[in-house]
Image (tube, rainbow, N blue to C red):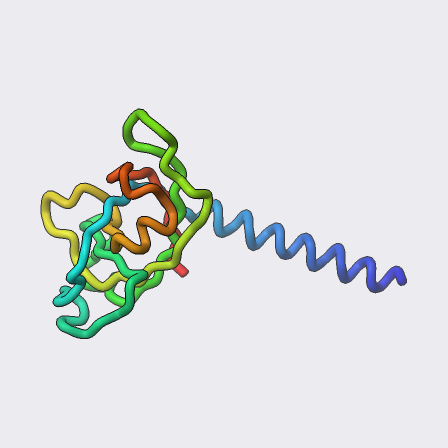
Length: 132
């Protein structure tokens, strides 16, 4: 029984370390959303990439190196006063486009992706995001 308990304790410790590492690597920014049509996009032209997609600002874009990268995005707060917008969920999105100069957020989520993590009436939210 001692060996089983030691293995369980080790697995729990490793799991906790992985969780803490991913939280420590999360960057903060803001997110807005855009509405269809989602094509053409800067990365894929007229190729459809589903609904869980996003455009990124210069903060992540890196001269197109962000194309195809997946990010886990979590709403952590409001950018303006009012009802807290966050649903308490996260979403994984694929970067398919560039949010040009004047972009209002770090990541511009598809309307569907934004709605999965926050109330669209908020318009703009504070997020944490990590590359997956």
